[in-house]
Length: 104
Image (tube, rainbow, N blue to C red):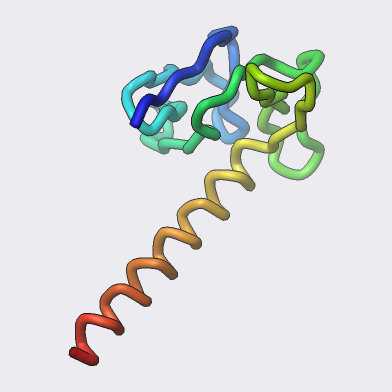
C-alpha cells in the first residue's frame, strides 16, 4: 500500500509543551513530540496543511486541513482527538481478533 503526504508545513506545535513536533513520513504518517515523547497519528493518503494557524480551544493543538488529491473536499482535523480515536479503534480490532482466535 502506498502512503503519502503531498503537502506539509512543518510548524505544527504540541498542545502540551508548545514545542514543534517532528513529521514522520514512514507508513503510517504521524507527528512526534520529542519533549513529551508522544506520537500522534495522521490521516493516510491526504494532503495536510495548517488551518489558518488556529488552535483547538480544548487541547491547544493546532488544527490541520486534510484533503484528498482527487476531489476538492477537505475537512479540519484535531490531531489529538483524531489520534485518540484511531488508537481506540485499533485496540477494539485487536480485542475482536483475539476473541476470534480464542473461539477456534
